[in-house]
Length: 118
Image 1: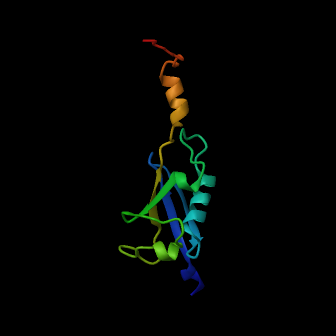
Image 2: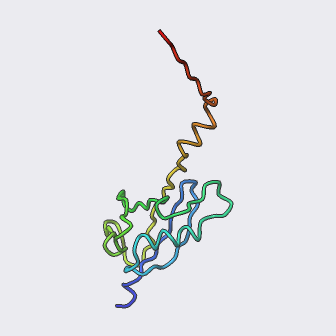
């Protein structure tokens, strides 16, 4: 029965490359799984996630919640014993700092004061 505590997963990235397959304990949280994915992320990729919030894991069309375990997040539809489960990894696009974006794209504002005496 100890073998049932482990699940074999591979992760499909947006560019079509895969990470894994590897075996993971079903008591592992989705957040700690994302940390492992970040550590195994291809170094030659142009976009590299920095935190677990930069990634979304999708299994059978459902986005997995960071606080849940793999056992709680599993959807057994279409799974066979001993089968490798493929989860899709979506990388959140990098967000731009509004202040720095505005300073880079807009011409600098000149301090314009006007007084009118009537």
